[in-house]
Image (cartoon, rainbow, N blue to C red; front, top):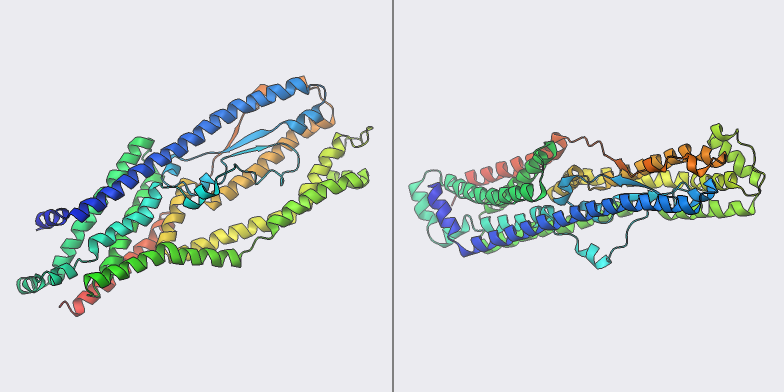
Length: 448
C-alpha cells in the first residue's frame, strides 16, 4: 500500500518541481553559509596579522612615551563562531564578531560595527534556517492541501468508504508518505551541510536536527488539522496559505512592533551623549575632582602622585574613565532592556512556532541577541583587564621596550552555551500533539 501511494505521489510533476526548488534553495543556503564562515575566518586571519603589524608600527614610532603609545594602540577580542552559524546566520551578519578596543573610554567603542548595504540587510540571507522555516512549510502545504479533497473531487472517496471501515487510516497513510518524502529532502540537505561545512556530530547538531524534524511535524499536523475540516481543495489551500502568511510574516511583525514599543531604548542615545559630554567637560574643569573620582574608582592607583605636567596622562586616562562612569547608569538600563526584550521575545515565541524555531536555531548557533549581549559584556571585561594591566606602566612612565609586545595577540570569547532539550523541543511537541489530536477528533466525528 505504502509503495503504491509513494509511486502515485511522486508521479505528480508539481511534487517533483516543488522538491527541486526547495532542494536547490537549501543547497544554495548551505553554500551561502559556508561563504559566511569563510568570510569570518578570513577576517580573523587578517585581524591577527594586522594587530601584530599595528603593534610593531606604533611601538616603533611612539617608543618614547607610554601614554601616547596607548592613545593609539588597539587590541582585538573575537567572538568565536560556531560552525552551525553557517546554517543559521542570525544577527552575525550585522553584529561584528571582532571588537578592536583601546584603553580609552569604552562606551564610544562598544557598539562599533562594519558598514553594510541597507538593501542587503533588508533582503537578509538565504541560509538553511530560512529554507526550513519559510520554504518547507510551503512545500508541506502543496503536499497536503488536497489530501482528502482530491479523493472526493476525483470521485474515489466513496469507493474507499465502501472498502475500508476506517477510511481515516487511508488518509494517515497518505500523510505518512508525504512526511517520508519531506524528511528525506531535509536529511539530504542536512547530510550535504555536514559534508560541505565539516560539521561534527555533537549535541548542538543533534538539537538542530531534532528541532527541525519537530518543526516539519508541526506543519504536517497543522495542515492535517485543516484537511480534517473537510473543505474543498481551493478552500483548504487558501486557509493554509493564510495561516502560513500569519505565522511567518504578520504575527512575527506584530510581535516585533509590540516589543519595540514595550521596551523602548532611549538610553542608547543618552549613553552616547553622556559619555561624550562627560569627557569633553573635563577639559574645562579643574583636574582635582576628576582625579579624586578616579582614585575612588581605582583605589590601587591613588599612590601615584599628581603629574607635574598639567593635563598629564594620569589626568587624561582618569577623564576617559569618568566619561564611562557618568554614562554607566544609562548603559546598564540599555543592557537590561535589551535582555528584557530578549526574554519577552522567547516568551511570545512559545506560542509562535516559526519564531520559536528561529530563536532556538540562532541560540544553538550562537547567532542571537543573547550571544551579542554576552559578547559585549566580555568586551567590557576585556577592556577593564587592559586598563588594569597597562595603567601602572603608563602612570609610572615605564620604558616602552620593557613590555613583551610579541605576546599581545587576539583574545577569544567562547560562550558557555547551556543547551536545553526541554526549552528547545517541548513547545513544538505540545502544539503538534494538540493538532494531531484535534484532527483525529474531527475525522472520528464524521468522515463523509
